[in-house]
Image 1: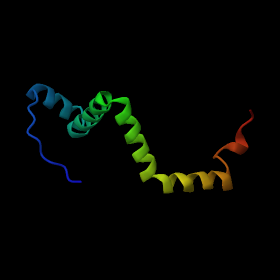
Image 2: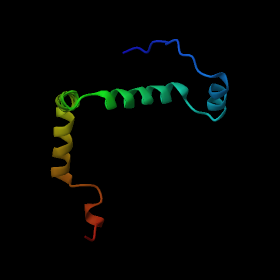
Image 3: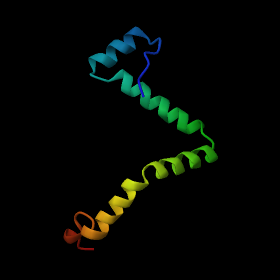
Image 4: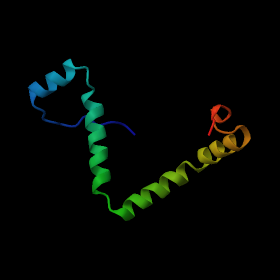
Length: 81
């Protein structure tokens, strides 16, 4: 999925300070939008999203579980509890 070039208006001083601090404005905006979208989702939408994610990643989840069954969890041999 491509990334559009949105027409955002940001206070110039804030933008300059963020860039001077080495912040990725694009990354921060994207993450903030993701958080806001999740906060506004209904529980049913969140549940549907979680189920979709699990379905899309079922193969990787299965492989991970098989890896743990075969080799155990990293550091198991070092635990004392």
